[in-house]
Image (cartoon, rainbow, N blue to C red; front, side, top):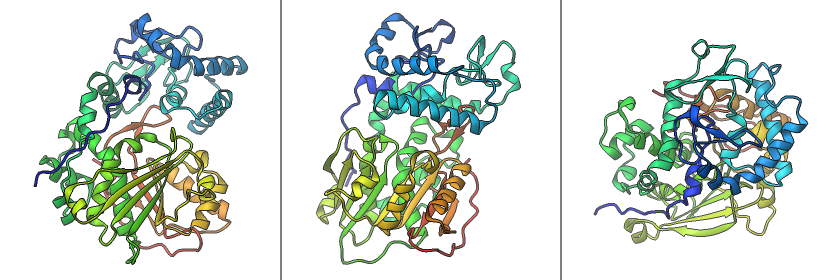
Length: 438
């Protein structure tokens, strides 16, 4: 039987060019001629290759533009030279975002946050005045007249991949529609002959394990597959799948990235390897979700034959609000992908997760974020609670994402943390030292 393919509705054009921000390219068409760009005359934070593209984006930009102007008027210097450490810079950026969200009475979209984190500034001193050079390869680093770009490191190779993928969203959106026609290779999933992301991609696409030879499409597939695979791998690794007469498996996902809504089909393969469970419900909770909705995802003929179902629920509310709502459904596991507990997860949410009494799976792209997450949980709970799993994730994404420091990248779900629950101290089990991503 040939695998079926499911096509999601195409994204609107504005969603394509609003998927990312880079101050060195036209925001609309991603034209790569930074010396010919024109900026918004009011905020000076976003750039276009011609007046027509500036007008095309004007209605969407006006709201944040007003907030940015007000912020700049209230700050001594928007991009300050006296802020020297990475932590100080990031703390200042988060202050800016908090101010703008209060002015706009809503959360910022991902590309709007990128306008703050990736503001056009000198790689060395962070000034946004007298900028003279832009890296011609990755288009993601700048320098001022006082500094030479070559003297200050940045991850040019991976930043270039980030830029290429962002440009493809606009110039070749059909590639990403194809990307979401994920083939249903149930025989591979059910046989479970893969034990890491590389071996899975090899089997799905008959390519070799030499990751530098992968196409951009292969790299993007790892980003889509990483979340459900990480959940399955983590639960199995921690022995948290329990035999149950209940045929329903409910996953709570604390959402900080709405992209998960666009790749729900990829979660179907869990139905092939979850054993006795017949119904998988993916419950996404967060204020970043555009609107609350529920539904079912079309599944393959084998799943229909064995009465398996993939359902989803999206709730535009905080996790605390959800657990106190009429829509609440008890979880089998709670997941926070690429979580930044210090900035995004409140102490009240952590206490609610403790009351949930379910396994908690957390991933981060960077080690210091993983360490911060563990410390914050301990601080809020007032205990020395330790994870039962704390290690390199075998199913991390291989797609680089620009980090908030903007000079380097991270790989989503790179670090894996699992608690059997937050209600009692757990003795950590032995972990493995996995090799770094190639």
